[in-house]
Length: 446
Ligand code: GLN
Image (cartoon, rainbow, N blue to C red; front, side):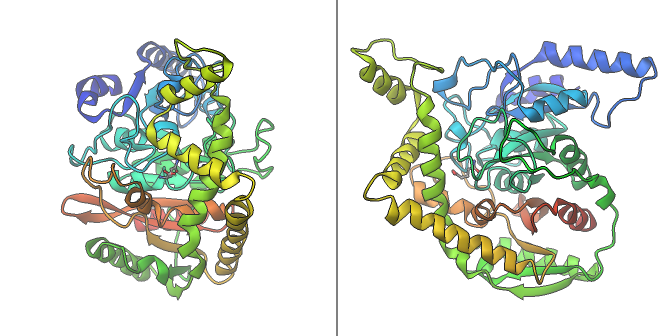
């Protein structure tokens, strides 16, 4: 069973920060009873799964892989957790990640590194590295992660699993520790597209506790499985195949495009020229929002408090200096700078304006195509330590995923091949609330 598998291999992988053996076994027994009594159960009932450690599960710790929240026990369930519990999911525990979801390699966890199941010397991607590795290593059938700029899709790509970032507002963020509220979305990691359709159906939907949650009916995503894609228009943005993309990765993606063409899709070259500004816009907006969201961690209300301090200001300073890791501090400083009087117009406001241009560009593109196809990441999984001293190089890992969060559209990463034994993912981007078409194309491709 899943718990045996975790106990056997997670020392090597490092995907789990907490295992709820008792809770999982009790739930499994409860489902067993229900089935014995002849009760009808959900498709997800009894299936072992796990949740990224920035999403609340009542009674379990939610650490965000930070010393700041090392001993924080969630007092309530996130909306997605509540929905999964209603579906009788067996929650195995909480998954490792980059601290506060900031990073692309899961090396920023304050507790331990996650390793890529395909090569233990390599990173699983990030920030939801534990969520991707757990599925790839067979420690859980599916997991949940969060995606602010690629944190579901990039690790899914590097670990050879399916990862979906839903449309902004499709899944409630209630109970997700906020990184950048206007970009964050929760989504599933699964081993295939069919499972993805089932999990998305379970976690999507309106929630009055999240003011940005969409009042839009949830579709039965499984109806998009086993469908024909003849005549479906797929856009290939030339900017995503330019300099910086590894040649072998490019070849795998080009092969995938050929497969889709043979299935009857109409392949069209398109242009998204604003994409070149996306990374800059992302790091200004995400850091600005983070600097504001993380202000609540002051050593008073939540989490870590410095042992010795002189007065209340000293208490804030010491608690935050000791509780946060380097990358989190870097983002808070960047964001505070971009929001400060005198720089606000030049950076934050300018970034918001460019965001609008990016949104308009995607809206326009979807007048001519049904989906857009790109690589998920410019490279396969890199070595542990290879980029950890160079933040800019690390930020480039997200070059193909951040524009999607800026626009708010949905996107899925699907395994598309291997380079040197390491998985390559392709990204399919859909129009707003059109996760169905992503499932349809992805399933036809698989
Ligand atoms: N790697 C990106 C960052 O560091 C994206 C993180 C995420 O999506 N949570 O901000």
